[in-house]
Image (cartoon, rainbow, N blue to C red):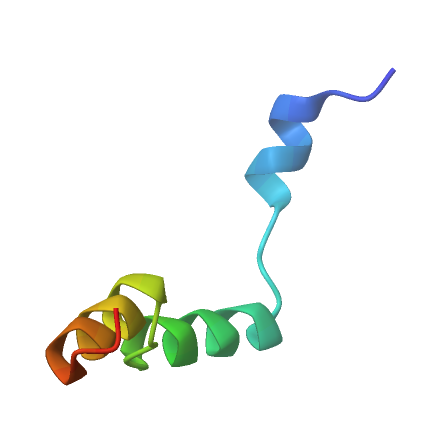
Length: 45
């Protein structure tokens, strides 16, 4: 059987995942709330 605890201890995320996390965390993403606020500000809602 697989010992999940030992496998988790050995786990190291790939550099691609780490780089993607950094980009996502540091990027200011527009979400639905931002879009709705802009629409209300422009009087379109």
